[in-house]
Length: 154
Image (cartoon, rainbow, N blue to C red):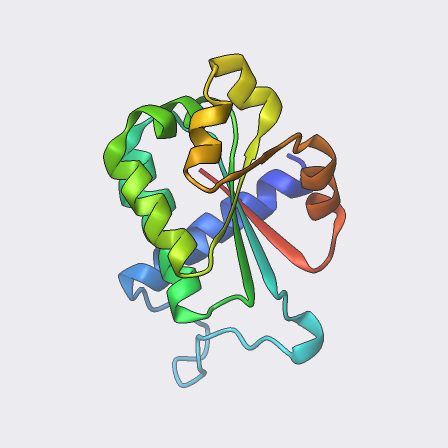
């Protein structure tokens, strides 16, 4: 399993545990189970790669978490990347469009892959939602290689 998949899986597990209020078991019951992150380990940016064409994944997982991260200030910078089938779903679903507008108003950066949105014929519609539509292969690769970004996929 490659590092990217492990990072994504780890992020999902940690997120689920955090959101559910899960308490980790430790060998020493008096030890604080909350992991400590030093300043040198802090990652300032979160890129959420949204690829799913499933509206439930968008509403109940991807958008809920992404918007909360931005509103709570858990990362300095939050970017939602619309990729693949999610571009078609977003172009057709008015409730998702309203959620995207709210995220943009709260500071989430929205970008969409132009190659993907062109393939579904929805690039213009996404641009009308104030989403930056551009070729994302190189920018995503730079994010994946950067130590300053965490990447989460839905």
